Amino acid sequence: MIQAITESVFKAYISTEDNRIDTSVASTKIRHLFKFINDMDGSVQYAYGSAETIYERYTTLTFLYNATTNLYEGKTKLIPSGHYKYEVYEVSWIGAVVVALNTAPASETDILPVADTNGVVKGLVTKGILNMTDLAGTAQVQYTQREAPASTNYIYYGQ
Image (cartoon, rainbow, N blue to C red; front, side):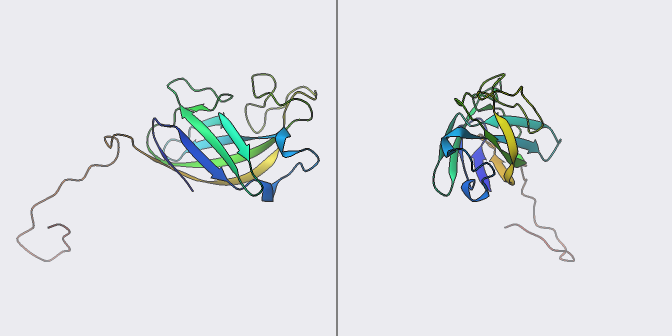
């Protein structure tokens, strides 16, 4: 599970090397494409991390908040707060890795023309839940304290 706060930079620590698909290229030739799925309305947002570091057993990715999303620069707008599902896809390059329009797939089904400088989606490496907490606390459910009832024929929670 990834924990994050809306309208803020957040980091994801995911296991990728254990589930690596394209082992014919070095780790430096791999990037990961995130697919965020809003549990409430089913909307989908894609993003590569603005920074990605692959370690021996895990990968860290940094995502930036921005009012204008950009999947190639890791700029996301994951609002409202709540639960999101995420899927992580491995993207592999043979030549120079450039995460940009026309060189990096925009989704897990995007197929670019064959070229060493174009990324190819190899498959799903992991999935999970992103818990997005509200920055200011105004969008989350607000509870109101009620007075204790006079009768006790039901369960009452409060002071």
